[in-house]
Image (cartoon, rainbow, N blue to C red; front, side, top):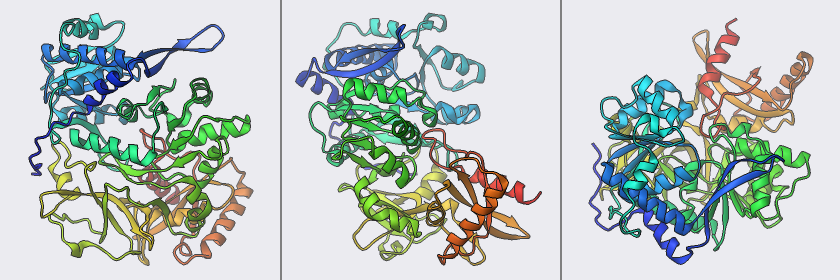
Length: 559
């Protein structure tokens, strides 16, 4: 069992909101789409900082009086919009612990995640409440329910009821939670293993805000377009206006580019977050239609390695001084490191194409980063002997105030992922492999679980794929291991930029084998398969589902 060290100072992430409401009461905090007019032009609803603060305070008081208060784990399943933001800040303000799960992970995983979180309450739209009843989500533990939406009255207590209940009270009151109090449980996407509930403490959230502020060099009056709803919750703490895009956040790769470009141009958006898949879709459209985004000064992309081609294409839509950053991290620790597009396009992309992996930049100042020997064993206590020299590939391990300390009710995963320091601190094993170069920059070479263990030695996915991705007709590739005749063989699965006829595929295979033969680590890869569209993760649509591809490749090769 991992126990946190005692920390007593107040540290509620929601305290940033009344501060901003006092400093900039009439500034716009949130802008959300609410439909389209007869001409197709989008209409929006918005809240000022004062309005967001007042409404979240009413919700906080109403939730507490309803019985959803400090420490109460509460599932939150509400679509991106004004209600989501007001509820999220209201819950944090009351000291309740939101349980956040991607709805796209599937019905079975949803039930197991909710049951493992043991929530005392459930706040959701009518569809989520009906699903809870039908599939038995949280049946053992959920005692209080709040429904959000136009038909809320059908399913008991509504959000409007909660707000009426919280009407009288002090608008500036925020529950004085400590830095080591649980703030939220955020479930991983399950793209590289079963979904796990990451326990965020209030101190983690505060540290993330400060790390992001320092990394981005934010200025007053910034306007953000976050295409991943969870990231938007940091905006009020950073003093930014949030413009919520009109999109399905569970399908960023299928976004309508016009619905991203229109609000950027209409509201003068200065910063946005987009997964690599979303930047690819919007960038291709933008280039084809000669789109310019002159106000956009910062673009963040994460969730999977971002190809230089995607960065270069999207950068062509931006002003020359704009920054595209690709921060590295995970649900358990974010941000860990970051690198800018100029460095990627001028230098590191060329090393990536020769098999060096993907450079994700130096660790951010608040992170202590080590690379340790590759092992599947538990490492309960830290020792300097675990570290490997610079330039040697190993598992990435991090420590810092934004690094979460534990998974909820998952002791086996805690034992495998956490290392205790002599001072009681916790280091997190990222499950990713990489190395530090002579300049102290981190290079990512793939997930530990995706390493292909051949008779000739282990092959890391990213260094191999980087070589083959230099072929102009390859959109992306994935290295998988397939057992053939009792031996694991490396197989390259390729997704092309455009469909190719059989004779063209034969040519492409030959060209890929010639490219691979130029590098020692890829010369032994002799099997190439073509896949029409790679399976990807549900959160960012960017992490390649290598496990599914390996099973597919095995079936193809055994026919």
